[in-house]
Length: 506
Ligand code: NOJ
Image 1 (cartoon, rainbow, N blue to C red):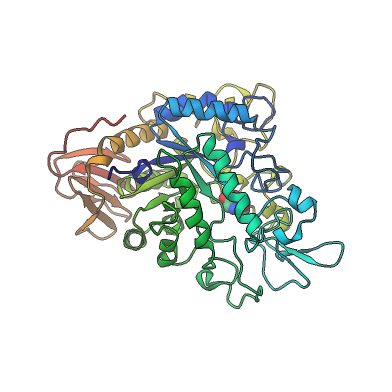
Image 2: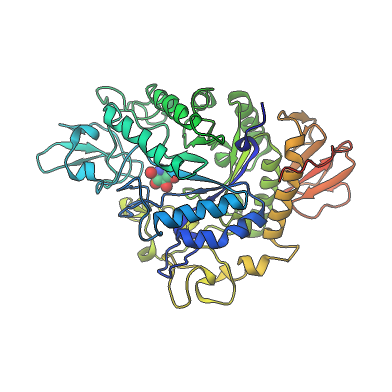
C-alpha cells in the first residue's frame, strides 16, 4: 500500500482569528488566510488545520458552535471557504477543519428550542468541575441543571441520543462534500459520560474517570471512519485526546477508528533527555502512526516554556526541539507563529483578555490569549500588517513583534523563519526515503542520539558540549556547531552513510 499523505505530513495550525485579517475588522478571516497561502507553501508545510470558523457567539473563540454548516460573517462566507480550499489544493496543500462534537453553543437551535434530550440535563448536579474552572453545571429556570465541561455557554451534547450521532455523520459529509481532507476532533475523549453520572472520585486519573474516555466513544469513531473511507483521497481525522496513558491513546487509533491522535506527552515534557526519550519510546510503542506537537492555541508557546531566565535560551531550545521532532517517525503539527519564534505574550492588559478561563478564575489564571496574539506580517505598518491600517487587532500586539515579523525575517539566513524553511525542506527531501523506525545510539550524559536508516539526529539538553556521533555530513543544525562538538541547547541532523537519491514527490 502507498504511504498515506498524513503519515509524515507537516500540518500547520491556523488559529483563524489571529492569522490574517483581510476584511479590516481586526479579526483574522478566511480571505486573509487565502492571501497568505503562498507563504505557507514556501514555508514547506503539507497541510493546514483551521480552527473553528462556524457561526458562533465566540464565548470560547469559536469552540462554541451555533451552526455546524456555515461560516461566521466575522470570518467570511461559505464561498470564501470553497475558494480557500480550491486555492490550497491548487498549491498542493491539504485542508483539515475542526469539528466540535462534545458540546455546542447555547445559541445552537437545539438548545434554544429546548430539545433537552440532545443535551445532558439532570435534576441535581454531581461534583464534576468545568475544565475552565467552577462547577460543570448550570441551573435553568425550571430548576434542572445542564452539563458543560467547558464554559456555561457550551452545553454538552447527549451522545446517548441517536439524533446527535446522525447529526454529526451528516455534518462530516457536509464538509467532505466541500473538499476537506480531514478533521481535527475537539475533545475527542469527551462525548459520552458514564451512565448515571457518578461523582468523580479521583480527579487525577483521566483514563478511569466517569467524565472522559468512556468505551462508547469508540463506536462513534468507527462510524466516522466508515464515512471518511467512503470518500476518495485518503480523508483523515486526528483526535484531540488528552489522556494519561499511551495505551488509552492507542485505542483511538485502532485500524477502524481515527488515523491519528494528538500526542501531548512531548509538549508536557520538561527540557530533559530522559523525559524526551521516555515520551518517544512510549509513543512509538503505543501507536501505529505517531504525531508530535510542541505548541498550539491552548498552551504557552514553547519558546517561552523552554525559556529559563534568558529568552535567548528559550529560542535555542525551541529550535533544537523542532529539529529533533522533525526527525521522529510520524507527522508533525506546527502552530502559527512558531516559525517566527514568537514568544508567549505574558503582559496582556486584563481588560484585553478574552479567554473565558481568565474571567472564570477571577483573573488568577491568565488563560490562553498570550499564544493567540495576531501574527506580525510586516514591520512598518500598524498591527504589523495583520489588519488594515488604522484598525486595532482583537488582541494588542507587543512592540517586540516588529522585529519578529515575517517580512523582517524573510531572506535573513540567521532568522528563525529561514531556519524553519530550511528544516522543512530538509525533512521533505528525506522523509519518504528513511525507515519509519528509530534506533537509539549510545549517547553522552545530557544528550540523545538516534538514527533512522541513513539519518542521524543528536540533541544536547545538557550544560556542556558533547561530541557528535560518527557521521559524514551535517545536514541541518538548530544553531552554530563548534567543529565536531554539539553545544548545549542545540540539535543537528547528519548523514551517516550516503543518503538515497531525492525522490521528487512534489
Ligand atoms: C479544545 C480546544 O483546543 C480549546 O481551545 C477549547 O477551549 C476546548 N477544546 C473546548 O472546546
